[in-house]
Structures are given as C-alpha cells and as structure tokens.
Image: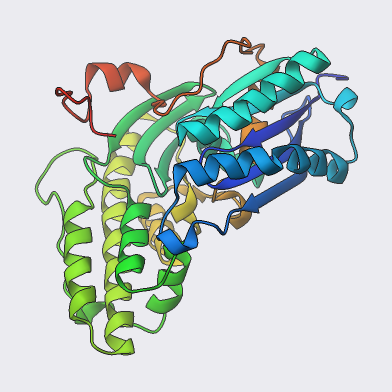
Length: 361
C-alpha cells in the first residue's frame, strides 16, 4: 500500500462462476481493474439450471488456479496486495463457502485483512468500474435471483424502496427460455430470439396494477409465458413469445423505476440512476430505462457489459472501498445464503411472512 492506494484480490463463487480479480483503488478514488478472470461451468446445461452440489465441487477444483491467474494477469504477487475480499453471501451456500474459505486462507497465510462482501453490494457498486458513479444514487438491482430498487448513499448505507414479492426478472427470462427450449443460460438466448419477434402478437399480463409503492411481481408473467410457449407452433411463434416476455419485463422494470425516480427527485437534488445485475446487460431493458431517465431528468449509468453478470472485479472493488474506510472482517465471518442489503428494513418490513418452514427464499 502506498499513498492511500489499495490493491485487492477479489473472489466470487456465489453461483456457477468461479471468478477472481485484482482491483486497485487509488487515493483520489479512481478505480483500475488490473485483471478479471471468470470461469463458467458447463456441467449444468443438461439440467436447465444450476445444481448447487455440482457448482460447489467445480469451485473447489479450480479456485486456486483462477486466483493465481488473476494475480498473474495483474502482474502482482500475494506480497503486493493490501487485502483479500470474498463473497460471503447471498448465494448457493456451498459455493459461497468455497470462495470465502479460500479468501480466509490467503488472509491468514499472508497476514492480510479480509473483507467479507455482500454479493449484492458488489452489484450495487459495479457501475463505478466503468464510470464516476458518485454517491448518492437510485439503484435498480436486477438479476437472476434479485430485483429491487434502493437508495444508495454510500458503502454499506442503502435503503430498500421496493423488491419483488415473488420471482426475480432474471428468473422470468430463464424460465421462459427453458419453456421455449433455448437451454441454459436462458436470458441471452431469449434476447437473441426476441430480436426477430413481434411483441404485440402475444398479450402478457401487467402485474400489481393500481398498487402503490415500488414492488415487482413476475410469477404471473412466468405462468403466462409458459402457456404461450406451449401453444407456440412455429419458429416465428416462439420468437413472438420471446419478444412479448422481454417487452413485459422491460415495461414493469421501467414503470417501477420511473415511479421511484419521481419520488427520489423530490427528496434529492442529485439525480443519478444506476442499473446493475445480469439483466442490466439486456439491451431492450437498458434502452427503456434510458428513455425513462431522459423523461425524469436523470443521468443514466450502468456497469460495462462484462461486469453486469457475476464477476470478481465488483467484489474486489467493494473490498477496496471498505479497506479505505477501515472496514474489515474477522476470520470467523460466516457464509450466508441470505443477506439483505438493507437489513433494518428486511427485519421491520419483511417481504415474506415467516411460517413453520421459514420465510420464502
């Protein structure tokens, strides 16, 4: 470490990507990604989704090689990094344990500080990897497992405005793709198919009409999409279904985001809207959100496409930002399958009522 610069090794293993990255945060706040290595697992394709046990074993096999490759590409050794950051949740807990345990081992062996990172905070800050996304900002975090609107005031300082009450937007993309026989991962495949479709040919439901607030719902859309996919007879029919589902998802995300922008603008003079997460890579979603920002007078920001999906650069970034604030974790940090960004709101206003078998995942 020199002159307030922090160089951090980041590790990400929350799902089926084994990723490592080296990020440098300079004293003036500038961010430099020195390396970003991501290894995806092909073993899940026959199952149409991620199998947790297979994912965890895959991480165990290659995490050491991936971490060393990230250091090699960055041109630094273990003795030239200032800390190690590892995803500690939320995610598939078996996979999370692999990356977190590896991070703890590096920290212990090298006498380095450890930062246990919330995977969602990684996505929340990921726009800073490609632009000067200054705090505060309004965030739409939208991925395969999460869909929420948050006010982001700084590192670890976020308030949830709304969230999905059932399924995530990315899940709706993936399940529709599976129903259409597009394989896994489904989101990018569905986007490609939708390019040749006509969204107006297949009506899709509009969720939560008339409901106040900023919550989302995609379960009804998933059901309608499955029925439409079953009824599709030709390639053009399938393309029309893909286009209709994509348009419906983009419409709901835009409607809720624009409503949140209006309320946010009344409370804050700073008007920056950030979209992050895997669904942020969808060009139809981006285009409609950009248009909403133009209508509301907001500046639009999003991570570079390679940092929308799961990656370790965003984890290393959070680690560097937290180290700069003196925020570190103990070696007793736990892997967490669930970890809300706004824990206070999650406790005071839970989205799901806990029953005998616990809250819905």
